[in-house]
Length: 326
Ligand code: CUA
Image 1: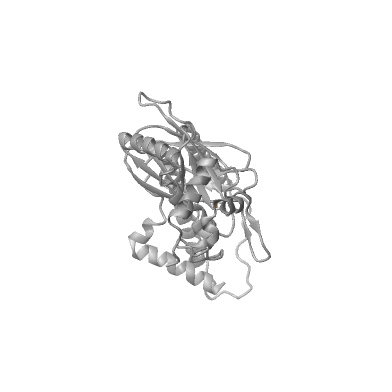
Image 2: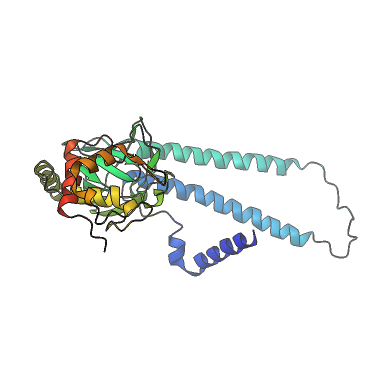
């Protein structure tokens, strides 16, 4: 307990001493209108919580000082007071007004957070976001697949259909600069969206404890200028068909390496570098599609449901550039 107090105390002190550290306690700069609404609500509620905190703690300290024992007997009772109508009215009315203000504010902000804006002259884009142990898979309308980094065009509303496969667990899609968390639930489709004007890389994190590698289930949105995005999407489409896209490398890094090590050096799962099995597409496919349960470990069926094109991308990558171990 004492350690906990010390820890919290020193963290608070550090935050007060270094404004940069304080910056880490505040929301990230919103880059999408829905994230804007969330930040506004957060700040609005914070004003009241801060004011009430100062009021309550101030009164507490003032009363402790004002009514301290002085030279009175240790067990002497204080004056007995019954009823204070004005005070009681105040402490009933004040919280009601505060809660009412917060509720009104949040209900006014809510449509801007939840509702996807109508598609403008530049159209819109819908992407399927699938949370799996322990990677994010993104599926574009033309069949393009990407792992962990979602590329999107600037200035266009992007609708996300967030889900998880039946045999998986619940994850939570969260890119703080682009809106709130939304759960990826097996067998259910949840919807969210963003619209970003400034190209850039916006990092995020799976926000639902989903297993041993949850902390490494990072995700990101890379917003590209519209023309650049269109070019990437076309190129990826062609590359996926021809088996020359970056998808294989993305699958290795996002799906396999989080457990087996980026160079196949091992980690929470066994080392794969030098394994002859990697050069055998049939074996790789069987294991990746079905997972594997041994006495010492359980590998989830990370590739269950992958289209052939996706499986080929991984097996080809493993044949052409097998992880070296160093
Ligand atoms: Cu997926 Cu935590």
